[in-house]
Length: 315
Image (cartoon, rainbow, N blue to C red):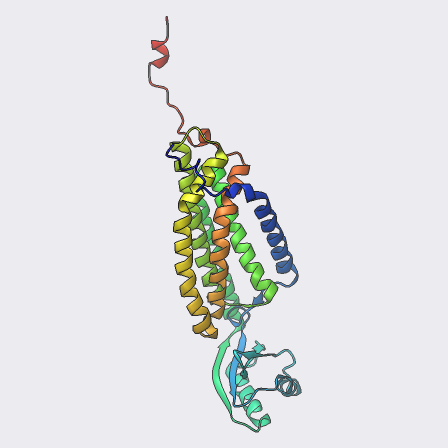
């Protein structure tokens, strides 16, 4: 062997596999619990309704705004600051039989009548409940289709232990990312769904690179244990992983801080997804394959007996 695994430059990743897997298990349990209890904070794209963004010249009094809405029958309205204390976001659920455009115009008129200062209408969006249900269904189908295609690809490409590790890492990333939005009650809309699909692609790409190198090293080196081979493979790909992650994070940080509120959820999901995807490709996919007993013999092609070989061995 070319002194790759035996040198001090190899990082002993598998030595920390148990603490990493315990951390992942805790995160998964917390995410699943939050998804079951708190659920996701579905955005207007999925629930339907009216979203209005207003701009005030001074800091807005959210309590007064809620009081005005309740007095006019909008008891379920969600009122919150949007970026600054002068920007207000009002979200009204879809009301059956009521025109969303008229609802938006009515709310804007109420806010202007109840305020002594000028109130600017920044944004007004309307989505019907039927359209929201259709978007939720189509979004779920898109997510499911992507996962099925990736599972088929992984099952064909890798030996079953590596395949299970890759699939486990992918499920790990998706569940924990959804858990983040559930715990923090961040709005989950179509842009976040698109980011989740991008996280799936990023995560599986990183995992495939690591698994490919593990397979290559198992076939190339014979004298080393599975732990040493896996550590060497992850160390080999570490520079590529770090460079890819850092360049991606730099772009996402720009989107997060400068991209505006409309893509804030998209940037948040991708930022978290890049970190969790990098972590899972190192400590989840590889650790699961190692704990399942991956070895060089599992990756060797099956021996094919030559025709007539048994006859040649006859006395």
